[in-house]
Length: 393
Image (cartoon, rainbow, N blue to C red; front, side, top):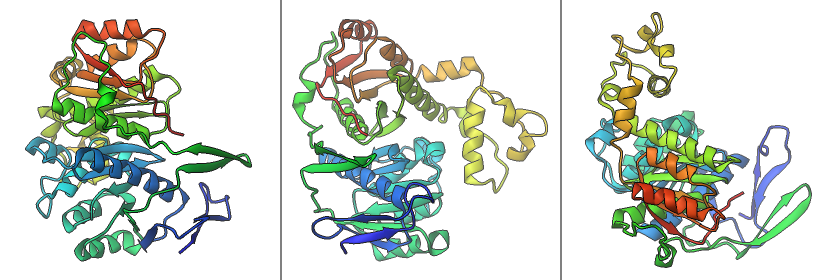
């Protein structure tokens, strides 16, 4: 198949719309549903991300994409009982396989942002993964293959309209890529940089020059995730998964704050008060996620005031106080942080430190590099200057 007609472009008024190959055939097959323009942008960007994560780490990888940026990305490490509970897979119908664990991590890190996502899997989708996907609100999935059992589950999702795309894992695009804006064609070489290259971690200007194997893995995950995230962007990673992604902010400190807030929320969801919230039976998954998000935040009264808490809980929970939140966040350590370009000021490091960051990888090259290094040294943070910028637009 050389081309595929789409219902419309980014918006319903943008017609006609299609995807096509100028040479050869499309390296994908729609097995179910009718993916749209944005679906394919999410699918193809997220596929590149998980494919590169798998190549860099040797582990199955998954990503959750929304509006052409990842809401989550992870590799298939086993989940602790705590993570299984906060990701709501402790009652999974089948044992979690490595690719199912990768998906649970990618989807679970920021469930609010992942609502209605497009999923990418580096490996064949098995039944365990398909059954997890089946429980969530999602637009579709892209993978190199599907077991018969998984395909049966996915084809029945969303009254038979769920988008299922099979991608040829051997496909390699041309080294030169093109896009159009305002009728003008842009051309550039594809960004084929190897982000698992040891040379990226050779320039360490901080006093602390030690990166654990786990930290280096997590920094590689952060950098690969940033390579497919709309800029400006930063990414906090811990234990093989992104826990906070800040995308598309004009100011880098705003990006660092946004991603740091998401990382804090991820950690706060593991607080005993949050894990023991007494939800009413049968509460919808989306309502539960939204309630947790509000309960953790400064507007907790919206779900705790009289007449409101009864909609969500069997009994009124205690407030999670600012002091309790600060004390719990202070326990988060060994977090890695990647940036798609240099940090212009030390304020980014100050904010990152508040969310447990101990390892940083960024391009370097700011006129205030000395201030950034000094701030890292104040907290004993190890930082590598990669010399690589990862803008993505």
